[in-house]
Amino acid sequence: MSKSESPSDVERWLTSQTAGVGLAILGSLSLRRSPCIREKNCQACLSGEQHRSYVLYGRVKGRRISVYVPEELVPDVRRCLDNGRALQELLHEAAPRYIKALKRERTKASGGQAS
Ligand SMILES: [Zn+2]
Image (tube, rainbow, N blue to C red; front, top):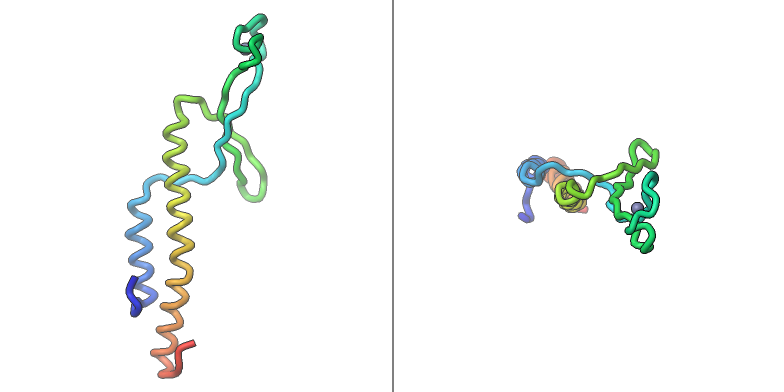
């Protein structure tokens, strides 16, 4: 993190970092237990253990959404969620760096004082 980076340095840094992130998604994955619908006398249901299923909750254009995630797809979904969080971190990190770079550029252009 250089003290003299310009807005385009920040852009190049962010572009190179996000390029390596991979497919990124956001949402919250949760595990829920529910009884099965059809089967009667199901052992899992009778024992109270029930059936595990994963659901991804999120928001799309302000609307709450939930998507069923089959268990075998969970590792894949988790990986992309981790990527999403990594991307979010990068965007948060980019904000102060970019603003500082813009201020530095403005100061340089006007020959004035840094603020
Ligand atoms: Zn059952």
